[in-house]
Length: 325
Image (cartoon, rainbow, N blue to C red; front, side, top):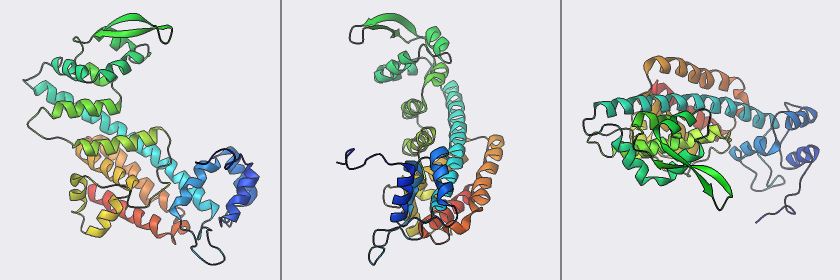
């Protein structure tokens, strides 16, 4: 395991020199401008993460150095990833809203539940969610709802030596209130709980969990496009089957690209979005989606013309976008 002796703190100037030693060039930006970028715009750790999309020389005088990698390529990938995360956050928010609307409509039409009993059973089976609700009971956004529909007592925590809110009853909370309180991950758990009791099928949980994973990555500002290599994932049957309907994507391409985790998660997002989101919202969001992929991402396409990994993933996802929308 590496420690602070193996990875000492380095100045931005030292980092620039290290990048040059690793074969990263500065043909489109001066070293001074790159240094300014790392000091004021983005740090080295995040910017350099996109280098995983580039190969290294395996032999010769340049062994261990990156092949055809310029600092500006990393910079552009970082910027594109930022726009990508913003779009993902919006699309996931649209999905969450419409999934809840559809679910509440189904509950309203469901003669087997009054909307309260399913909350009781669900919370009884998932005690950890009760503790999460307790922790947000002082929130200015959900606190009033929680205090209105849950029975709460103030308890003293002997371990933490402080008072806290404790939920002692939740039989007055209906499904339509619970959905306003749950996190997206806990909502998916409730979604799975409810629809597993029904005779009709809905969005597969394996697919929704992929959407949740992508949503969390965007929400936590993770570098989503930092590694586009394949072989890290296996697609659920529903995703593989729908992509098999695209004539321009053969079986080998489908398996290979869907084994790339970021591609699989984004394809799952597009799949669910197409099924769930209302036409009016979809119209505006798809305009943003196509603007990013078919316009903004092509602004500096010459940067990536020699990178088959990036090009092939881009071509694949464009075919998927055109298929769905």
